[in-house]
Amino acid sequence: MKSTIIILLGLLLPSAVFSDSGIDGQTVSFTRFLNEMAACTQYTTFENVKIRYILDEDKAGMDKRFNEGAPELYINAGIRLLNCDFDLDYWLVLRDITFNDYFAVFNSTPIKAIFKDCTFKKTCRIYSNKIDFVDFDSCSFEHGFKFVRNEVNDRLTFKYCKFSVNKSFFGDTDALDMEPRLFVLSNKLEGFDLLVENSEFNLPDDLKSNPQFFLSLTQSSFNNLRFMGNSLNADLDLSETTIQNAFVTYNCRFRGNIILDAFNVNPINTRVQWSTIAGNKIAIYDHESKGLYSGQNIDSINSEVRFNSLISCYANFYNSFKSQGNRIAANACYIEWKNIETTYLKDRYESGIDRALFFNYLMNVFLRLFCDYGTNPLKAIQIAFYVLLFFAGIYFFFPYSILSFHKRSLFDQLKIYGRYLSSPQSLLEIEDSVIAKEEKTPTYSEYTKFITDSKGKVPWYFHIFGKPLYFLELIRNKPTKLFYKLIDIFPDEWENMSRAKKVIATVLYGAVFILTVLWFLAIHILDSIALSLNVFSTLGFGQIPIKGIPRYLTILEGFIGWFLLSIFSVSLISQVIQ
Image (cartoon, helix red, strand yellow):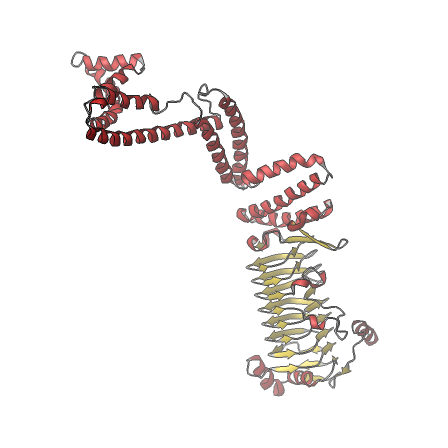
């Protein structure tokens, strides 16, 4: 067994020169163990050391370090722990310790460790150990971290930690691994809980595209994975990883991609803050082409297999949001998913791979513009309103026979003012003569005249039924007549007026002229909108009161309205059902 371990170490450290510690095979206290590491002057392996809590030595030393009373400890040499055996009841507490060289733990048991305010100037490596828990709190890993093939019973946590790599150490053959890494955690054994909280992962921008420096949690199994409040200037690789219970990520700042190919989660217990991973951050990595593919470079994907893999990543989160009733996040995820699909269809069509996809592409473009792929019925109503106003603007410049508010046109009204200024008649006389000429329903006119002439000559119930009609007739014209009384101040004809009166009449009736034009224009606008709404909604109130080319436009508007309202109905029903 010992020869096997030596061979493994030889493979791991082909060019390392290291010495054995002076306490190999011994049982020592925690305090002496730390002091022995600090006393090392060259790479040292601590092998088969039993570390136990010894009251006389550790009561002062370890308790003082645990309570922040001990001075900062510097360990200058590279340290390897091999086959070490730790106390079953007491924890290894390493606080305020700076490791200026490599630190590795290999094949040791059972580890219950807390690293608090520690700094690892070079790589920290933990291999093939039996661990109850390890907590890193406010630690700095200046040249990466690696955690591989360990058997963890409880948890591994990182809080307020900082991770980076030091390019000046690249090519250092004395490293435990021949290649540097930012963060690697691989667990193919029984799942455990992993918590990474309020930590920073800072990678130089020129290394971000190199898969060697991904924040790698790939091909692992976890009971629970909580990734919260972290800042990442690196790509996070969760491909082929399984979360058996809860996957939670909130308040993270991802400045790289999140690789999720074949990522398996429990939909009910997945809590993802979509806003932090939106913006085409979801990606896959193709090991054959050594390329990273996301919505940002979908035009270069050139493979149905890669496209399907990328879409499955979105479907994973989309199904999780839907199963939890989170419609807002589900819709946002679906929109980004469909945008990628639209770009993919366009690329496939334009490259000539599949010309039959053209209409699928056009339909996606239309649904994106009109209702965000069916997720936003209010946007559909907004666009329908713009279409309605567009056609109303066209109808506004063409004559039609709608007179919904007035019984006379703008020009007829202006003729009344003109007749007043050019004749000795008053405005009320001219108005009454015009009203008398306007068409009315004969039975209605005759009945109102009968009510007026037969007062006291017929039973009371004729008046009860007729008076409302009569009063409505009077009220309808009363505002107009009152307005005429206010401006009827020029009994003389225009040509007979004095110069002063002409000036006053010009100003007054100029204002009346402008107000009349604005009033009738407002009514004309309402009539145009009413016509457009009638045509758009295909209500069909009788014959369309418009002629010429605009009549053909009404047919086009009716078809567009039918189509858009149908899409709106489907979109609305879909959202209501969700």
